[in-house]
Length: 210
Ligand code: SF4
Image 1 (cartoon, rainbow, N blue to C red):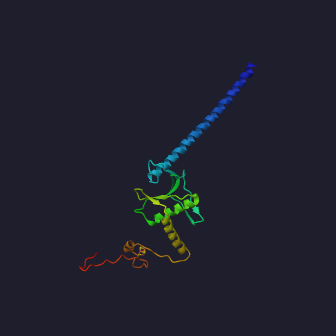
Image 2: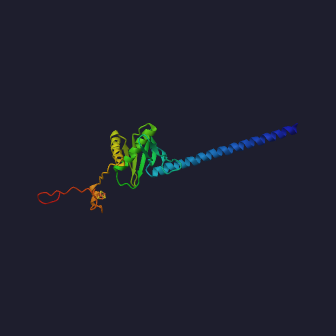
């Protein structure tokens, strides 16, 4: 009888030890996995701060950074508006999804950068059903941050540009609109039918250029 009970006790203890060790291993794996995930997400957040996408110390959360495996950015596509694109990052600020476009070589703000950001803003509104109030452009090597508000006037301006592009796609001839300063130093200017000339200098009565 005592021998039987001792054998049963040993068996029971072995089972408990084996269950405990499995549970311990599982718990350790879960803890380890969450530490790794946390470190990877911290790294993404740090690299986002380094590029100027996320401001240090802010409560902004990067929910997508293009080119990362941990938080990739998905293509934004809307058949309804006939647009598609993928911003360099998407942030969460005050409950809004905020697109970010990074232009590391940009020396100044240009219309085409604003147009690109406005497309992302419109796509997010179509897909999420909530209009983001603004987006960010990060310009130049110093990561200058420009906040572009998503106004009705700007979206109307974008519509005008999109309509011009659709007209060209439908066969209308494209109209070049070069900046005269660019044409002034362009090597093709003598052959180019679209060149824009700088305004002629006006001479005052004393013959001094103004
Ligand atoms: S001259 Fe012609 S090719 Fe050169 S910048 Fe002007 S429009 Fe462009």
